[in-house]
Image 1 (cartoon, rainbow, N blue to C red):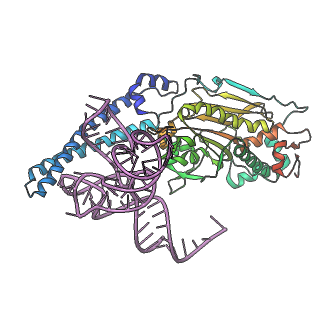
Image 2: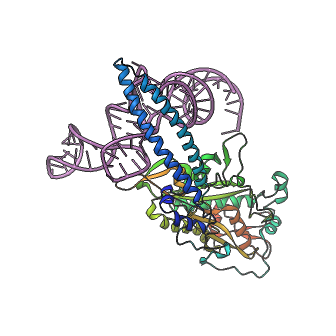
Image 3: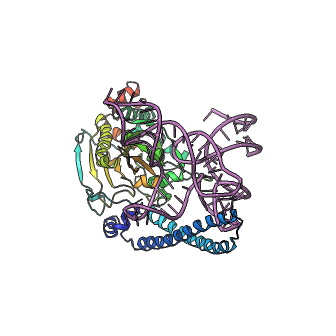
Length: 425
RNA sequence: GGAGGGUUAGGCUAAUGGUAAGUCACCGGUCUUGAAAACCGGCGGGCGAAAGCCCUUGGGGGUUCGAGUCCCUCACCCUCCGCCA
């Protein structure tokens, strides 16, 4: 949520900055806000009168004097206050809806663009592996090795689900452990294992609600939704708290499965592990002081990149332009891994600084060093990494002419020393 | 699912329907070589240059001139019973 004071005082600038994200008209905001403030002024004046006179009534009654004239006058005032409060509430509700549906402002360093083709490449790390044969896609590799079973998965749950078997299931589990160990032991994150379904408040806090409910699985008869990313439960760990500045930055790493309806993606990536209704992800979350949050974004991104480096996977980092930026984000780097089977780069991590956008919605503050008024923290998060897509990258990049797959060295301790996934690996 | 108890500011804890008292912690100051103690002040939010005003007792609604207090409703927490990995 944007700062209402900022919008009020910098209306033109806000309209101009929002226009790069497709929603530039703030005229209804302006009229609603002004109306609300006018009514509020009037109501406060009447409340002051009522408080004053009511006290007088109490005094008169104590002295056994007559107060009926004051009482009947206040009956009318109370009625008027009630009417005003009612309208103020309505305007406030409308204002709230407006603000909750308004995206974050892009950071000045974010390029203005029309679509993902306008995302500049920030850096390229490693190089494409060369093959003496035509590299296969992960679906073919996985099915031939008997480690991924899409057919039976469909019988269980329909399209966009997978059934991992044998070395495939082990590989998935090994990756989760490898990633969590790396982030907790070397990058300073505290591991958390949050609930996989949380209440709607949390989704409003991080920005998935109210605007994107169609992407979520709701638990019938409950106020809960399945998490589409650990960002939701983990960022909300500190909702309605005032954090100690000395404790910042707070770093959490969390594994969760992620559940997404993928509404509107019909026909995209229908086969394979790329786009699933349920997938595993290790998520990194940081809470930062406002001054340092962009340094924190660089560190967070580098922590995610480190996973790919250790696995020996080639990737590039792109900076999302205004058109591609997520609703809540002020600035986002996407890490894209090279997939030889698809002959293209695919997103495997998305690292964002939300500044105080989520903190304002979830009410997460910190008391600045040396005291003073609490300020909203800056929240950041990034995948570290999407596990399913990492499996895809390993299968495609480490495939051999005989159809087997080499296990990256960093992963072997997590797979009982296994060096190669074969037919019965 | 059944029965009972509870929710006041960071913690604890008061308030015959009369406008949130106190205490601990914390922060600042005085004193001190330094610290502690003692003493003074601050310590929920909004608007405001300030004076000040408004809001705040888990959420929402009602009664009343006036609600922490009375009524309705919802949420959450605790204890016991039942069920359960």
